[in-house]
Image (tube, rainbow, N blue to C red):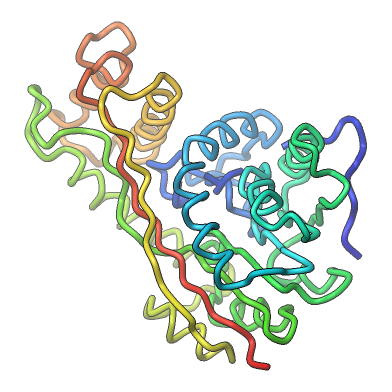
Length: 321
């Protein structure tokens, strides 16, 4: 049974917002796979983390809006829309705006984030057709009142050990003719020019390589982890669905960026330093420290050349009539 959250104290992930790498904040707003620990095994205070995740997801709103506009042409009038791994509900509320005739259910394992989602829905005037469901993906989807016409999974799948089995479970909760929209893949976010004017050029490329290693280790450590070739259309086909399209959407915030973008970059690079600073050489570690020092004019808090460029890919597939 999906739980309606219209209580006054309910509040808002986005998974959610970044791709779940430590450079995207360590945990992402769309992450609802029941992982209550950060990359370093430390328990996360989701009530404390919620506002940061919400702010980060809001920064990515232009990207999500373009993705959902594209999606609305593929699934025109859904009755039930499910955000699987909703975090604090930024995208879930955008789904409610995109599909004004739909009921939207935000699904996540973390109750404090769903409380933020419920409060956000109330604040934006969509609470009368907005609910939340707390539990582990994909099993919790069995508690939905009825099959979904649209199931949105934004960078939550890669936090589930057996992605093939999870996709089959997602497909099994779709109504006939329903659509699964899977946001996975894309390109690493970029914030900085190749040559920073300090340290060695190419710092962010080296950080990307470390993040890839971290991601591989994270995937291998998940319960029931199964290695899969990340051919998402093929995996959607194996789940019994018919792929209907793939498209990549950009977030392009050119320099100079607003303060909230600086905050996002600082948080992302700070999580990287905490997660893998000891794997950097002395020069790169010192450069990263300078980039994060609010008193250093060369830091991300002050640089005029700071930007945010991200690319997220959405794959769609339908359950055959």
